[in-house]
Image (cartoon, rainbow, N blue to C red; front, side, top):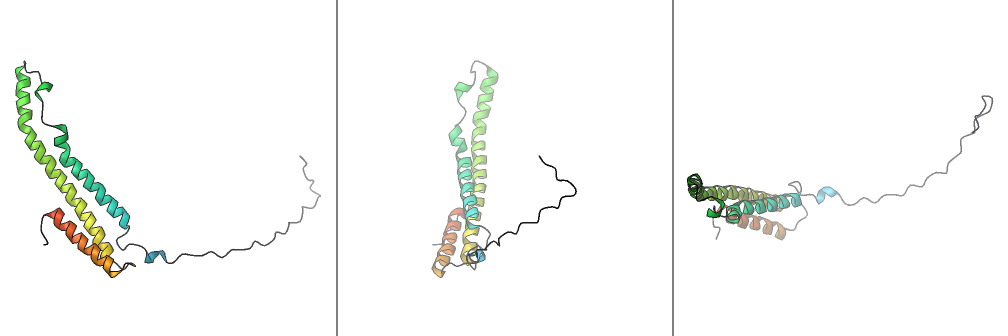
Amino acid sequence: MQVPSPHQQPHAPVAQAPVATVPTVTPPAAASYASPSGNFAILIITGLALLVVGIFVSELPDIQGEPSAYDYDMADSDDVDKYAEDLARHPIYEDQMQGLGSVIKGAAGAVLVYAMVAEGVGKGNLSNGVKITLVAGSALIASQFFGFSIF
């Protein structure tokens, strides 16, 4: 490695050739394609995920089943009392899970209806027929989820 002496002149800077710039093509305004409610796909996926969770929670007591006598020692009087108590509590557990599942499914319906209505009445590039279909579909979903009839 050579160390330059202090009496040497530094090298002159090398001239670089100018870099040609390529014009970039920008797509049409992304805002014209954006959903007014934020992200339509995320809201739909969230609503469907909540719906699946609500269905699972509602069906959980049926998956587990009621208490079985084989799980208890019937020779012991304490276990017989515990079995009778668990058997009496099982319908309450079923009702609680059904109620929780209904609340989750109601939230799912609200998210789905909100996404469809916000997309349908927004200022996007959708045709009027698609907007009317979205709003009518959301009314149909709302009627099914919230238990009233529109027909």
